[in-house]
Amino acid sequence: MATSDPRSSPLTLGAVFYPDFELLDIYGPLEMFGNVGDELQIVTVAERAGPVSSAQGPKALADYGFADCPPLDLVLLPGGVGTLAQLENEALLGFLRQQAAAARTTMSVCSGSAILAKAGLLDGHRATSNKQYFSLATMQSKNVDWVKAARWVDDGALVTSSGVSAGMDMALAVIERLFDSERAESIARLTEYEWHRDSSWDPFVAYLDDASKELGLV
Image 1: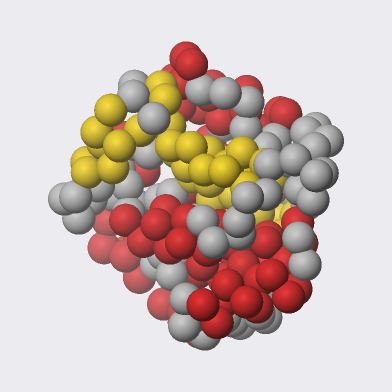
Image 2: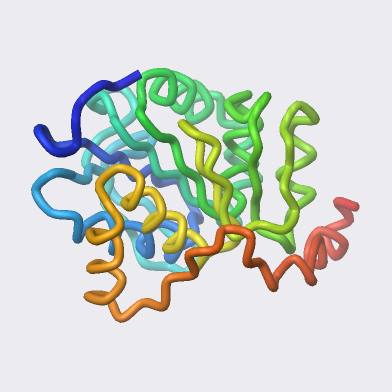
């Protein structure tokens, strides 16, 4: 595990892009992490360095490819409609296994937890996912304690959140854990964001697997 102290040396957060990722999944949390200050630096990474198209159209720029990505203290993986294709992308799965083995915290937003589960990283852990596509995640591993009603689930080195906007609540909770409550609360005020601090607050569980049913997953 990474042993750097966030108060004495910068942590490196790697935001992972893949084709058709969900914009808010990644940029919502990065808004929060990006306001931490000098104690944290953000790099972007994809299978190959360069532009990566989001599900909504705008492209993101990956600073690094998997082959030359530096060691990461924090890993942030989004979900999105591109999740399905990435479940079979051994390059991404292998990269996540490699980085998570040394990272302090590996995080996913939305259906990104399906990818972590497929990589075997959630086995033996508690986790959650996007509620409307919940079965997409649970189908990837039966060795995960899947939590249906949760805005996010913090299981130590692995933190997973529910759909899209939930990633911002998760990010603030991780900032609170790594730094302190005052830092997280200050960032929430700065971004004029109403932080849902109760990880069990989950009104969207009422729509559990609605989209999965339409896709014939359940």
